[in-house]
Length: 379
Image 1 (cartoon, helix red, strand yellow):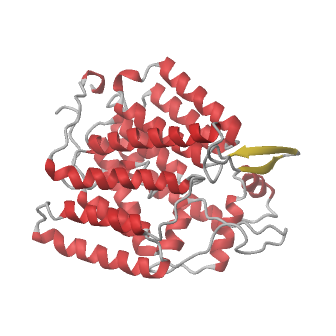
Image 2 (cartoon, one colour):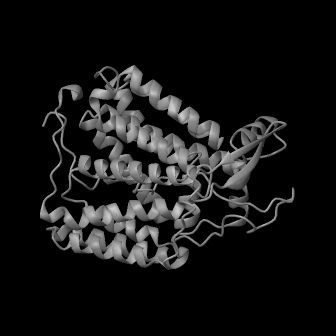
Image 3 (cartoon, rainbow, N blue to C red):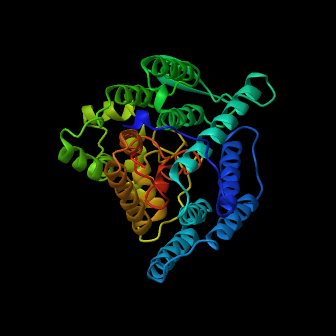
């Protein structure tokens, strides 16, 4: 049973040094970049992080049979980089390769501690007035709501970081999954929701609390059903997202209401299908403010759904590789009977319908599962 496992302090050996430094630097950099502190270093930090990951890879013994596979993946990623001009993808690839001999719980602990500290720092600086609090406005029915960034560039950043900090914390803290801790965590999430006005992320937090409390993967009952769920949860969520985006029709009352509930996500996804081709190696899609003009006069455009974003921005090959990696990670977590890791995967699969954090390895480390060391709970 997971509750009987004693977690000792993690020790990091010399072979993990470069990885730990690079991963910590990546987390700090990405959080600062998403805050109003702002960083414009022309990609220098990404280069430094990549060098550190490469130094760690040089210490890994890689079988000759795997070198060809890594080479093919690297060529695919290179072509996607050329087409998308996105520096994140090579950093993610190098991080995954470099994690081969590192225990997943060590990676998760770095992610939790550094992310929580940096997010807390940004929020405190914003509350003290040292850095600006961005404010945007949206309408819920006839009510005009103020959405606070609380130190971040977008009001969705803090709820997103908190949601995945919440999942990571309860994964690493088996003794603190009591109702009182879940209630406190949900209450904090509610306060963030009232300030940032991000409904969907708060609803996801409630679902997470319910799953952690109900412990659906606690026993071996319905193991085959759970196996199918874990194997297919990402493909099913992906197919649902793509179908809704492709066939969205504002004249259909049900789809129109769903689009409003999802904050115009279906409309943007349908626009993407109609205006961009699906390619093998991706393309550079301009997103943000003032990138296009819609019939209603609005100029904001962003692909929130991770599945649609991956397919159009990175192309079919990278899209397929990422989905397969997550499917394997789901399978692996079930094999090791890590019930809380299973919940984490399921929630990310659902969250990727509304959010685009599937490659955010700095705050969501579970994509490392297929590549790093994952010990059985019996070990």
